Each structure stands twice: as C-alpha cells, then as structure tokens.
Image (cartoon, rainbow, N blue to C red):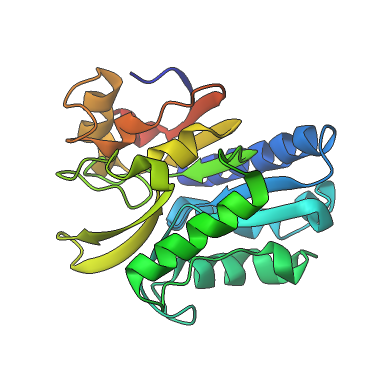
Length: 238
C-alpha cells in the first residue's frame, strides 16, 4: 500500500518539488552527520530535478563536498553510452557541482555484470559496514511497476542479502545492475517520483496493494526504519 504521497499538477512542478526535497533532506542529514549519501535514479523526471539542483539557488543550498553519490541501478553499458544512468547524471548534475571525485561511486556497467555487482556491494560495505543506511534514495516506477532494475516476473528479494545483483531484463533485452530491496529499505528516506498517464493502471493497483512484489516490484519498497514518500504527477491518478 502507498502511504505518504504528494500530488503535483504537472511534470515541471514534480521536478521542482523533488529538487527541493533533495535540498531539504540532505540539509537535515548534514546537520547530523559529516558526510551524507544520495542514491540517484535514472529517468526523465530525475533528470529534470538534477538539472534544477545544478543551478542556483539550489546548487548553493547543499554542501556538495560532504555528499557521496551512489546509484540505484545501471544499464550494462559503458559510462559514455547514451543509455548510461551515470552519463545522464553526470551531464545533468554531477559535472556542475563541487563533488569530490572519489565520492562519485558509479556502478561499472562496462564490466562483467556479476563482477560489477559484487564490486558495488563491496563499495557499500566499505562505506557502511554490514547494513547500508543511505540518507536519501531516489526511485521511479515504470508503467509495468518496476523500480530501479527490479522487474516483474522475477522475485525482487532474490539474493537480497547481497545488496546488489545483476539481472537480465527480458523486456529490455539487456543486463542491468540494481540495488536489492534490502539495500533500499535500510535507507533513512526513500522518495519515489513518477509522472505520466501510462503509469496510472499500475499505480492504482499498487495503491490498492494488488499483485504483490512479483507482479509490481515497487511493492517491495518498504523502509524498515525510515520514511517513504511518493511524489506523483496528477495524470498518474487517472
């Protein structure tokens, strides 16, 4: 079931609200911790929010030197490929804010998928220990109910304890890397942003708790001791 949600009138307002939420969330986290973590998502709505974050005044509202960047998923392509989530994030945000280069921890989509998944899990363990506690995880939801690279028809909890796994998407005909629900649900805050009427049917089913995580993997997202908030553009409501 969907709990806390905010409805925005259009995609532009959604991007504005998501950008402001990132600023507020990281600001609150930085008041408590020296270094904070932000997990980025791919997609059109996140990109619009990243572009807003890269510009003043929001750019100056965050101490980027104290932020470590992670990724929720990645396509198994080179970082220069047009399909790369890293490339999108770099072009929209990362190249425009004063992040420390070692603090941008990308998934190596160009490597063997299984090896890359293990490497990324090791990076997470090196940072957090046994259980990651990301400060803010950004996610989206596809028209089929997938989130990150957790796709319908495959158990989203498979190899959950590994934190990162390689998955092959039959619908996309592509290998992907993804955080598992265990990694996501240990976060302090998870924000799911979605726009577009093509997502209305899945959103309605998820809102009613229908189908379960095997049919709608986004239903696997339920922070164990954190906040989950949905930012929804009005057309998603049907």
